[in-house]
Amino acid sequence: MSDLKARGFAHWGRSSLSAGLSAIALLIATAVPASAQSADDRPNIVLILVDDAALMDFGAYGGEARTPNIDALTARGAMFRRHYSSPLCSPSRAMLLTGMDNHQTGIATIPEVLPKEHVGKPGYTMHLEPGILTLADRLSAAGYRTLMSGKWHLGSGAGDLPNAHGFDHSLALDASGADNWSDKSYMPYYQKAPWYEDGKPADMPDSFYSSTLIVDRMMDYLDAGNQDEPFFAYVAFQAIHIPVQAPPELTAGYDGVYDAGWNALRQARWEKAKSIGLIPQDAPLAAMPAEMRAWSDLSADDQALYAARMQVNAAMMEAMDVEIGRLVEHLKQTGKYDNTIFVVTSDNGPEPSRGDDDIRLTIWMKMHGYHIGLEGIGEEGSWGFIGPEWAIAAASPNNMFKFLGSEGGLRVPMIMAGPGIPEGEKLDTRTLVMDIAPTLLQYAGVDDPDGAIMGRSLEPVISGATDAVYHPGDAVGFEVSGNSAILKGPWKITRNQKPHGDGKWRLYNIEQDPGETADLSGAEPDVFADMLAEYQAYSKRVGVLEVPEGYDSLKEITRNTLARQFKAYWMQLFVLLAVTLGLLWVTVRLLLRLLRR
Image (cartoon, rainbow, N blue to C red; front, top):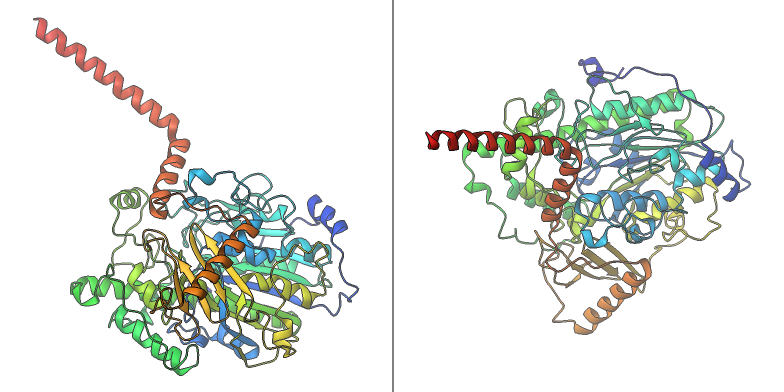
């Protein structure tokens, strides 16, 4: 029993599992050949995805949260210090599980911010398109058991859930997030929390804590299958996505840590990053954007509230780490640990959204039993968030945060540990989210006969056979909803859309200036032109559609949310309108009668 369970947190009981592979996995198995490597020798794989963790959020990277289990895995293996993901969750997950660019998978962005001009276009269908194979597809065909628990968010229609994409068993949240204490939605875009087990609506417990639930279910799946077969376990936590929620005793463990405010944290992480070698000693820190609030301008009460919000954020990370520790211990007890490769990474940088600046969201929260106050913060009914200032501080020494092509949105932690991975490595070569799939496939001895995978195996770097898989002349690109970046050698161009950007391209020497403080587009016109040409080539190659003029992701969320609300409640709205018109007609008739007397 875990420490969290001992403190009284709900445990979802074990339930019986259905056996056998789905029909689609059987079909794929005939099409994707595996190597001749013996199943007895092949490593198990545990792929752990953290939601919205900044580069320095793990303890091993210098963060304040206590993450001893992640840190132990880091010490046992390789720590990647220049790892890049996409700036948004679903595209990153698609790239992680396929080794392909997000536009090639069908998940160029997320449905919540999709402009109507892009709806249904190739690469923008918002589900894994026909012929796209996941890690689970490929590993299942090679004789692996394939298991998933946690956030999915890769398509909501028939055939879009994990059971249709190679996973033998899955407990999957088909949404951008959900409440962590109970089975309910966390934002107006969703009418409910869409949890599914093996493709069918899941029978959820009355109460739970999401990180515990996700690990419990994964251990159920691990115990139920053929123990002679290697397994692939994809564990996708909700931590530390909105709503930020955590056990209160863990939150209390960070009393005072964030009382000095976001400017102090940003400075402290920058100094720490230099001391542990994440950035050069002379790397500058960008100024806080003008639209960000100064900590000193907040009232004492607001400072206490915002400090507590960051405490919950750290506690949610720690609570997740406790559950990772339980999973590791389970694998040790069952004799699987020594032959298991672990990957722990984040889908993108920290989340800047607020819950206290939109009256519509405030009304929705009141209607759904949420509050954003200090009392009971992080507990059931608390709608936690950290906001843009804490997000930019958490992203330090990098600039900005999730959604954007800036370093704070793209540069995230990534560790690998297990057989074949030397202990204590610190790797400063550039790596991408797309590289994880081909790396794991190589360790599993599984080929890519169709040549669809764009990412590059990191095994040569890990083993020391080469210093880099991306060389100075190799350009790599990212684009999600107009937020874009190209990296090539020491150079990076990036542009960010509203509400936090202006849509203009800027050039940085990212090796000397990871904080993106000095735009060199004027000083280096030839480099700038070359990088723009590289972006055009990337855009054409993967099928990027440019966002409409004036695109603003917040406005798109509002539009798409209203459309979904209308679709869900049009009958109730029609009845309400009919009743209102009827009452108005009766009132007018009565008034006319009175006037005639």
